[in-house]
Image 1: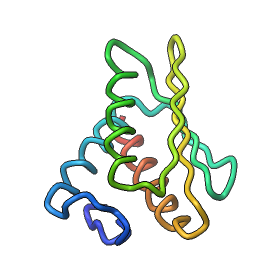
Image 2: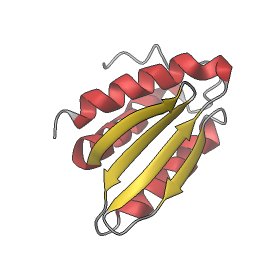
Image 3: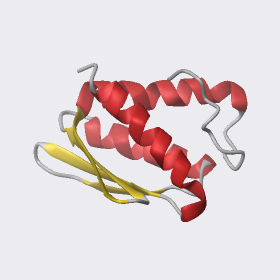
Image 4: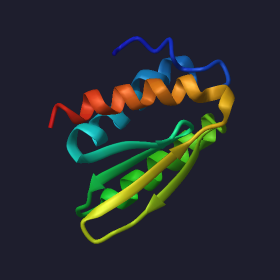
Length: 111
């Protein structure tokens, strides 16, 4: 899934930086994803294995992503062994969440 055509026009991250950001998310998911669910059409729920510095890494990525893609709503729930990450979008960006879910699942399968 190296094609970034799914990234919406509303994303303000410079085009040349997008592959780097996607690679950061892919690496996090490949290393830490323990479960993925779609409790609602417009919400993705991820559980990530905890560890030293993981919560900070997740919060950093969430903050940067929210800065360029304001259509995302992130909720980080810290835990002892797992970090919950909820990602929500509005109806207009459901296809973006679909693509993110597929990409996340693929990255998580690499574990």
